[in-house]
Length: 244
Image (cartoon, rainbow, N blue to C red; front, side):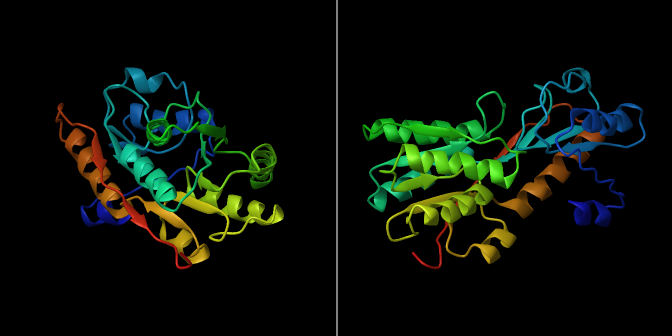
């Protein structure tokens, strides 16, 4: 996004709220006080009322923050279908999903909905383990160990992101479960760094450069005063592992 804005003569202020609502509100105040032209948000804080009231230019990426704020997202529902169908096609009988806690309003919900719809369609019980976005890897691993202990029959896992998928693969080895021999794992994101560090991971790839371009386009439309700017959903694709 920074490169795209730079080519258009804009300067970008980047801020990491570290999932701290107070920090996010500080960045939002810069916009509300007319110190910046627009704001693109992608954090996971909830309940920031200023988003509901403002008419200033804001675009969100993969996050619902206000009814009037357009969202740029990947096709989470289709991505969920692709992931679960791949596991079914690979012969998995007991498929588990990991996702954000249900109280976190996010397009990730559509990944879980796709998982549940397809599992029900195949007369299989959907099981989802909640994993908070901002907890440590150690805490996530505790959840995944609990998952393997409670469901030793699991042979397929649709993880809500590639980081969790990689942790699941690592924890699975503690239970003598190895990808792809007796455990299949599909992640979601497909970022270049993940493909480099975890080439054994099959994943649903988001069109990250296109999402960045679209977020810039929508924000510039809002800055120009357009009032009919709509949310955009972009297609995803399956990236196969190097060991499948």
